[in-house]
Image (tube, rainbow, N blue to C red; front, top):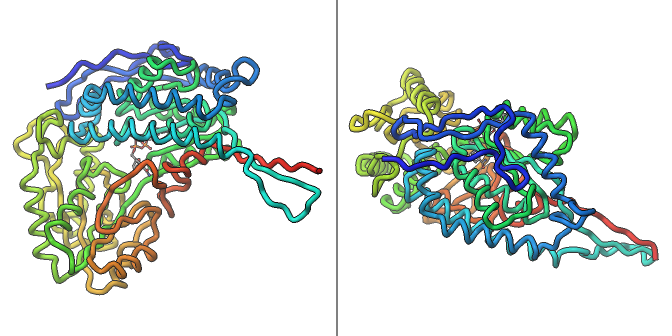
Length: 489
Ligand code: NAD
C-alpha cells in the first residue's frame, strides 16, 4: 500500500534544478520501511545560488518587484496558492501520510490548515497596505513622525518533519505576505510536500526567486543558510540542540532569529471534570500525530481522587483505537517518523522502567504489525520528577502521569520543566482555570481542551521552548522591519 512520489529537483529561481553535487536522499515510508523515492540533497553551492535568486527577486528591475509591490498584489498569489493546495488536497494528504506516517485523516486536516493559513496571510498582506505611514504623536509641533513597515529581506526558513507542509507554511505565508523572499529548508526526513508547495508556486506563476525550496541535510544545507551573510533573518522550528547552533551562527552576523523549539507540556486534570470528555482531551493532547507535536501535553497531572477511574478510561481509549498503515481507513495512530525516532522513544521508555516507573499501558510495538516504526500509545505511572521521562521531550506517543492533591502542588508540577510551550487545565471551576492560566509559565494555555491551533492566534514558547511568535499578526511582524520617519516642519 503506497503511492508514487514525484521525482523532483531543487526549486531555485522559479525552476527545477539538479543539486550541484547531484546527490539524492532516499525517502523511507515509516509504515513499510520501504524506499519509495528520493529527494535532492542541496549543499552550500546550491544555497549560494538560491540566496542570489532570492536577493534578485526582492528588488528586480531596480526595486519594482516583490518587496516594493503592494500587499494586495502579493495577496493575489497567496490566494492562488491556497486554491491550488485545496484542489490538490487528497494527493498532498497521501504524500504526507507515506512520508511521515501521519494518519490520512489527520494529514487531510493539515492540508486544510495549510490552505487556510495562506488565505489568512493573503488578508494580512492586504491589511499591511493600510498600516503604512501610521502617525506617531510627538511632544513637539515642529516635528511630525510616522512609521513604515518594510520587509526584512531574504529569509531562511528551516523546518522539522512532524508537520512538514504546515510548519513550512507557518513561515512561508507570512514571509511572502510581508514582502520577503525566502529559502525554505525542510527536514531531510519529510520533504515531499514542501517540494509540492514549490510546484504549486510554479503553477500559479509566483515570480522566480520569491520562494526557493532546498531539500537536504541540516549540516550540508541548513547550516550554510543560517550563516549566509546575505540572508537577513532565520526562522527556525526544530530541536533545542539545532536551535542553539543556529543562534550561534546567526550571532556572528548579529542576524535576527526566531526559534520554535521543544516542549514537555503539562495537562492538569481536576476532580470536577466530566471523566469521558477529559480522558478524550488528554489522549488527544498527548497521542495526536503520535505525540510528535512540540506542544504535546505529555505530562498528565491528575487529581488523586479520580486517578484510578480516569486512568482506566485512558487505557480503554488506547485499547480501542486503530493502529495501522496511515492510508487505511479509520487509522488513528500510524508509525513514528523514522527508525532513529523509533529507537529513541523505546529507549526512553526502557530507561523509565529501569528507573522504577510502571508501564501501565503500551511500552512496546503492537504485536499485529511486524514491519514499520509502530509504538503502542504508552502510559507511564509511578513517575518521579527526577526521572528522564518526566524531564526530557520524548516526541512520541508517551504520557507520563503524576497525581496531586492541592492546586499549589499541581502548579508546581506543571511548571517543573525547562520548557514553556503549552499548558492545559481541565476543570469546571473557571476561576480556578483563570488562576492556573496566570500561573503557567508557557506561551500557550488551553482551558478545557488541548492542542487546538488557529492561524489567527499567536504561537510560541517561553523558557527553553524558544522565542518569537508565529501566526496571527505576530507572525507577520516576524518578517517586517519598523522604520521611523521624522520630518522637521
Ligand atoms: P531538528 O532540529 O533535528 O531539525 C530541524 C531542521 O533543522 C531540519 O530541517 C534539519 O535538517 C535542520 N538542521 C539540522 N541541523 C542543522 C544545522 N546544524 N544547521 C541548520 N539546520 C539544521 O528537529 P526535528 O527532529 O526535525 O524536529 C523535532 C523537534 O522540533 C522537536 O524538538 C520539536 O519539539 C520541535 N518542534 C517545535 C515546534 C514549535 O512550534 N515550537 C513545532 C514542531 C516541532
